[in-house]
Amino acid sequence: MYKDTIFSAAAMPPYINIHTHHPEPDTLSVQNVRLSASDPEIPTSGFFSAGIHPWDAAAAEERWLTIFTAPDRYPRLLAVGEAGLDLRPAFAPRTVQEHWIERQIEIANRICKPLIIHNVQATQALQTLLGERAAIRVVLHGFTGACETAREWIRRVPEVRFSFGPTTIRSSKTQEALRWITTEHPDRLFLETDDDPTLSIREMYAFAAERTGRKVDTLKRIIDQNFNALTKR
Image (cartoon, rainbow, N blue to C red):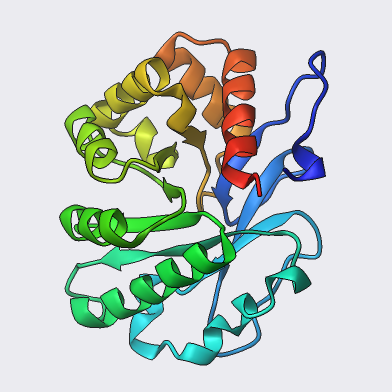
């Protein structure tokens, strides 16, 4: 367990943003680092995740993954990713994307860190890959599915977690999935702001509280417990 995440019983946990491109002051944020040919820009403070995004799969090289060869050099590296599949025609062929998500699953298994997953039009493919290969917890960032989709994820990938972000505000079916997860599987719940610079994590918590009927403080305690479980080592 990371020292930053330990709080006394009387202390109120921080706002936790499990996936963001714009970390905010006075929050516990996991900043996304998108690996590329140039040296990655590692944040000077706070937690971060790092991975080869499926949008970059066509140009990706094995040397981009050297950040994971000595994870002790980066004690604030919390997770592998964002990695995953985006099967829209604009991006690399499926076989190319699958190669890099498979490599990152292998790495996450080896260094015992969770995966942050990007999924666009690839639910069944990712369920198969992760269900067969992932031995660590998996966070579906920016989850946009309905309750039925969430149920199928839990059935096929037992260590899956769900992170709800800006798209939830615009989707009634995902709001219903948020309510269902919060009620039936609160140990799988996370919130995020992703790459939206106009939305604060406090606003995301307030929105989730209004939609689920839970108090913000209750959500903070639930997500704090989930974060500690996700990052224990």
